[in-house]
Amino acid sequence: MTRGRRDQRGSAIVELVWLGILLLVPLLWIVLSVSQVQQGAFGVTAAARAAGRAYALAPDDGSGQRAAEEVARRALADQGLEDAPLRVIVTCTPYPRDCHNGTSVITVRIRSSVELPLLPDALGGGQPTFALDATHTVPIGRYQEVGGD
Image 1: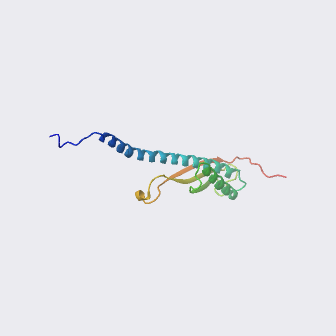
Image 2: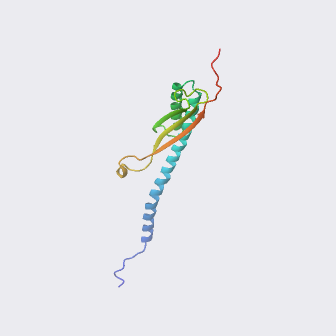
Image 3: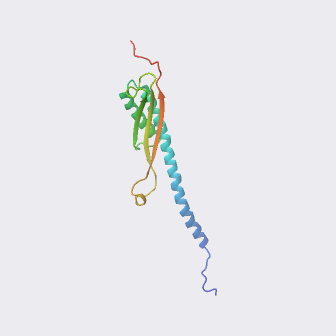
């Protein structure tokens, strides 16, 4: 009767190691992904704030758009997202064609994304990304300095 039984000594350690690996790998991926997304969220928030300020301080809409894109790219780079895609969208109310008119409200929207780490192409057919979006609103004052002598 005892001949049919296998010796079970040492198998608990093996099972514990395999269970640990099976639970640790997904947990590690989740922690790395969340930190990557948080890094991107900090980056787009800082980029929206900086782009809004740069646009408002520019002398006209054309140079404001260029300045906003430049500082947004720098803000993303400060967070380690140099290669992240970037889209800067500027809207103004109540003067949509003249954002630097007194009493305008400038809204800058930054769109970007981050790639989630450590996921092989075989599982999803490409590197998965997480979309990020941030806005910042800057009012233009009624009274503005006009270039003088």
